[in-house]
Length: 290
Image 1 (tube, rainbow, N blue to C red):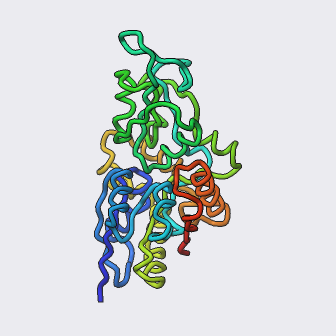
Image 2 (image 1 turned 135 degrees about the vertical axis):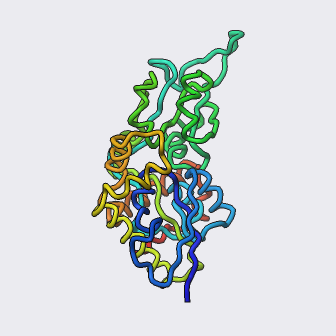
Image 3 (image 1 turned 90 degrees about the vertical axis):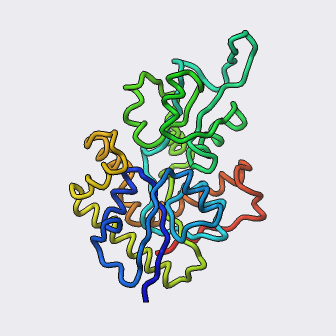
């Protein structure tokens, strides 16, 4: 009997690389049929919060908020050293703590463009600069254009923007990933694959095995994944796509391992301590499916 699994992943190259084999039915999934939807990660976060998807890529910020309903697969995650979002500035040498003025000379709070309320990038900014600035949420691809047009003062830049922001004439104020590493001595957990606990332990383990096999297939056949990545990220060169994969796909993508699990625990603790997540008394630990 075939079991249909409604699965969502992002259009980012690390996801289309990791899921190339499942998207194109390159591996045996047994009695599981995966029905995919691809979209921006914050759209995935919101859909999960609305109760959609059996399995989905999500920000680990969202995973913390949904820990009572969803577990984390040990394969498919994006975390590591040197992978964090960048806090970019529209003007050189400016900081969110500076005084800003409108066109009439009145003081105003700075505007910080972020890639979604439930993204780990927004969580990191709120940990770095608590209650500083007016946060405006938007699709990640709109952030650098808003900075160039000076419709925002700062922007939390993710994905390919890490490699292209200099070409856009923007300045990096701080690498929030490096800030995290210095603060915690842990790799930065950005996002992972969540699965509904209601599917049951056996199905969760079966899906985990399929995801791990898909990641391994991509690592074993990298050139084969290019057509899938380009289908969803057409504006980027082959070199940028593989640089993205090199940055976000690593040993922790195959398996979180002890250090990856510890990094997730620390992120959850800081989210609760800062008040970004709900009260610690309502806290649910993240379950990891091996």
